[in-house]
Amino acid sequence: MHRNKVELMGFLGKTPEIRETTSGTKVASFSLCTTERYKDKEGNKKERSEWHNIVAWGKHAELSANYLKKGDPAFIEGRITSRSWDDKDGNKKYITEIVMQDVQFLSNKSSNQPQTTEDDIPSVVDDDLPF
Image (cartoon, rainbow, N blue to C red; front, side, top):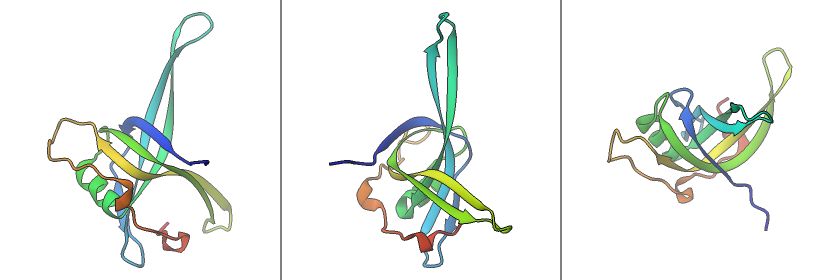
């Protein structure tokens, strides 16, 4: 079986922005930065950062908006999706995103932070996307 699964541990690049679809489903989006540390051929320490677009639906969207903010550490599990749309000038735009299926809040700020699972994710069709 082939499975589309991603696990990322990083820091939020921006506080989650929450919106609502026309059908009333909540959706949040934010960026997550991961950093890889390695040594080059000469033995010099290097870092390479990657920015990931994260989308959270339903309960995950609400939890993200309530418990996460820019700079917070988080462990995100999800699946990779790509989509395209035409901008206001008719130009085709593309984006690759991680649809969150599970989150662990890594900050010690609150011991009341809930954990979520894949069962908490609503079924959503592309027509529901508010962006």
